[in-house]
Length: 373
Picture 1 (tube, rainbow, N blue to C red):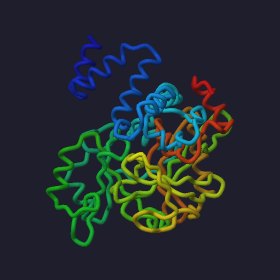
Picture 2: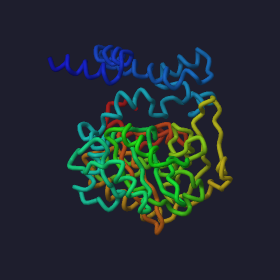
Picture 3: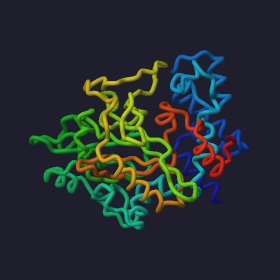
Picture 4: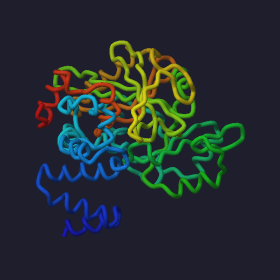
């Protein structure tokens, strides 16, 4: 009976096509269930990329979708085993945190855990939730949101379980006008948004540091920092700076057309940035393509402090050993933790260097998952 109710709920939420996909995947044994997921990923985001059938099948055989042929430069080197593949991600790495992954999959849970473990000061101020009273979170409506905007607050509305920067709304009241995602709006527009969403968190939009705003002022520009905790001391495996573009507004997300620049973990210095190769072309930028501001060589102020504080937090999350942190650097070399991610965007990070060439990282993956490295 429970399975029947769950199936009915899935059909209603996902529709007949996705219901059929999830049903078939449920019936398939490991690892073929995840191979099916890889095929769906290829259909969703890979089929538009220009690539020969031979190379497309070769990529799938090694666990990658077609866009990564260009992103990881497999057209130059066939070093597939140096990279954590998409198949390994859906089959193994997403399960490294076990049941604790729920802390990262749900922003309500993340906020509660951060608060319980004594790190509430690192979180952006939360005003309430739309359509949910999860964990005692105050429900907030359009009238209260308008009051906050009128008082000068800049707000961000995002789904508690969403990812990839989709369905995010940035609201403000500037020079006597309401603004939604950098576009003029009115009270009616804001009320329509509030009435159309459910399970959304309403938080302050923290002001980013001057250096980040100079890179591109139309979006918050955040860091993605991957920490690993093998059991003794946590460490930063790799880090990248996301930077918004005209294509990605109002967010900086890589999947929406934002840039990714590698961060030198030792110095906090940025390398050249690149963009997801939607058209099969991988371009690199020393300067921002829209703002013309220099990216390469820019240093994150207070990087040592940020790194030390983050590793201290990661140490207190030793039961969640694999976290992709989203960080907004603010002025005075401080930062806020936007969220933690269980499903870390490997392409955003590995476009700069393959993770499995590092013995320390290989050992972590071998010990914490069943990846054969």
